[in-house]
Length: 224
Length: 224
Image (cartoon, rainbow over all chains, first blue to last red; front, top):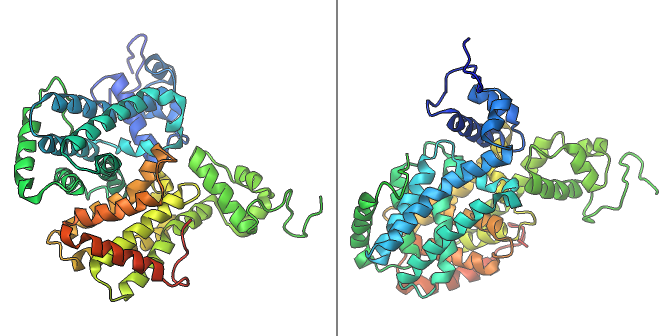
């Protein structure tokens, strides 16, 4: 089998997106199926169709691969949050849009990588970048919830975030039971959680849908 | 050091509750800190202060230990759900009570064992008993939500369960950030999620608190 000099491959790129993406794809599947600790870089290289030495050309360690996967589950939502915070739409519409977008990302993520949040290893110092992005996302949720005028806004932030992230648990239990409709239900649920007035509900959702449609492609990576 | 014949111990029972409980205690901590795959039965026996051979006197395998821990996070809630379904109180009060009790169990669980739900191994056939208990619990939630009269009851079941279980994710992020107050917020949030009328809210919560206080000790293991 012919091999390209420098980065020998035993097979064609499985994702067609290049070696780094092949590695992330393989690792996402293996971490999700077997867990982080039980997966070796050797197994990842094998599944990606490359030699272990080639893997280290792209990622310094297994931790770095996990970090890249985790950052990939949060940074698109942070981009969307920044765009939504910069618009002038009503806070409830922006909150609906952020919840729906974020939940849709978790619904459509290929390997439910969000479930890796709970791997014990993620608490370590290596993952500071991931935790900083999550903090920024949480602050964006917090600001929108406060702007909606809920008098218990601060206490609601974690419940709203928890509702959005519960998509991870739903998928784990029933992989085919969640879809984009679930993401809309989650966003509706967030407005109910913060006691948003029922009479203003439909308008907020419709404005939220319009906001999502108008998001600049450059600011966000569309999920799915 | 003196040793009891048959079940030699290198140290006193760390929990004071006997060897089986020592093993569960040690395994709960190790699985939660390092993950299931990365924990050996040797390490568990070591942390429990017993020999590996003694561990196998109580548990046939590492899977059986994980199963016992998982069942321990769900069966008390199933007991509470059965008791609540058998009472004649209004459905909203019973739903509030079930959510609060269930969330309090997850809040107070020593090692956030609920986080083990997401270990990939839990999908295997070995854990059928756990999955059957979870199905029964989900059905109880479903019946109470339907009895509350929400027209979208079926779609709400997973959101309400997701909200309750999001306590697991909150604890993972901020171990000191959840307490019994959080459990009350979660139960309030569940009633808001199913669009329970705000004017009936306080009465439902007060009745829920009374229901919890009246639960028979025999039906449930009190959390905490």
